[in-house]
Image 1 (cartoon, rainbow, N blue to C red):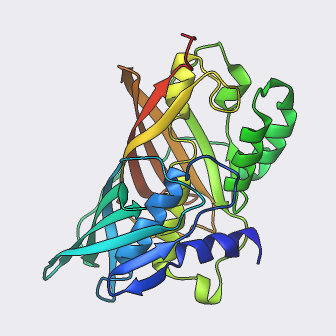
Image 2: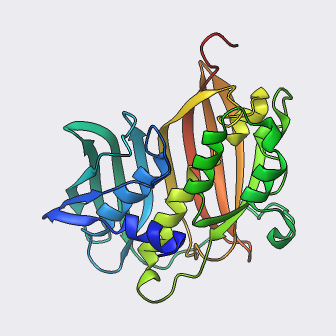
Length: 295
C-alpha cells in the first residue's frame, strides 16, 4: 500500500464489539501518538454509528494524556442523541484502561438554508510552492533533532503540504506576525472504496492538527519541535464542517493566533477550496512552553 492507502486503512478501525472500535498508530518512531490521528480515528468511530446520510458538522475534543504509539487505542462510542435532524455521539479513547482523549461530535441530515461567508484570503498558486520535504531539506542545517524531522516527514507522508511563507523553524529567534498559510491535499486521489464523504472529513481532521500552532510559534519567535526550542502539545480541538470539499483537492489552510498566555496559545484556522468556499473552521488551544532551563 502507498502512504495514503495506509492512512485510510489506519482510519478504518476494527470493530471489536458493538460500538467499540480499535485502531493502531502511524509508525513514525514517536514517543506519543500524533493528536490529529487520534481525533481523526475518534471521528471515524463516531461516523460508523450514525444513520446513513448524516455527516458531522462539528466536533469538540480534549487531549487528556499522551498516547503510546505501540499500544492499540480503543474507541468507545456513546450514542448520546438520535434526533429528527441531528445526531450526537461521544467518543472516549482509552489505552491500558486510561482515557487519553474525549470527543463529542454532532451530525446533521443535509438541508437547505440561506448562506454567507467571509471571502477567501489571497494566496499564491500551490503548484508554485515547495513541498514540505523540500523545505525540510533546504533548512536541514537548522535542526537539532533530526529524529523529529524524520517523524514529521513520516506523519505527513500521505499529505502534500506546502507553506506559503517560511515555517517557524526557518526564523527561530525572530518574532513574526501570528499568521500562517499552507495548502494541502492528499498524496493521491481517493477513488473507489476510498472515496467516501466521511473519509474526506476524517483526513481533513488528521491534517488540521499538523500546523495549527505555527501561528503561536511565529508570534513568540520560536522555531518549534524540530529546532528544539519549545515543548508543546495540543490541549483541546474544535472543528466545524461548513461545506462539502474533497481532501484530495487543494485546500488553503489559513491560520492565526489572537493570544497566548500562561504557556497556552490559542490558534484559529479556516480551510478554503480553490473556488473560495469556506469548508472548515478550526480552533485549538495548545501548550507552548520552553524546554527546562530555557526561557
